[in-house]
Image (tube, rainbow, N blue to C red; front, side, top):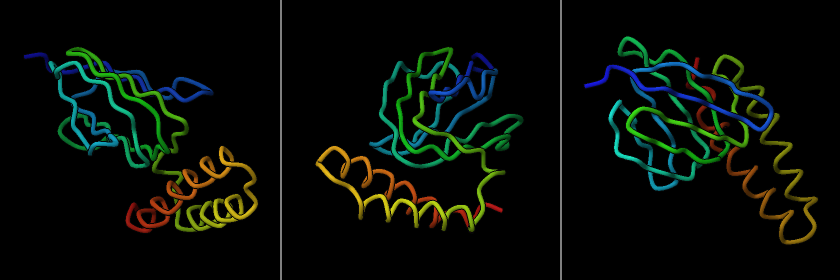
Length: 136
């Protein structure tokens, strides 16, 4: 069995991570799932949550993602995200500020498309606000 798989974590702005890893945990919309080497080919949309990168049987890095897609092959996992925030950048104050901005955006939304985007941003901010105090 292969020991590692290639992980690429990509945001619209840049390639955030490209390395060989032991395992990746991904927040799929149908449920959180783990990806190990030789995983069956899979595609999944993502919900707000954490992508966890494992090395030496421990979480090496953790990123909060707001949504996106994951493509898994037996040798790789490509995670395309709308936004990714390293765990080290997440604080309770940041989460509270983000939640307040998301609520304001929803209150000011005009049109169906704008409301849907604002609602999605609010759901991501609510998840972050609930989990941020437990991260450090």
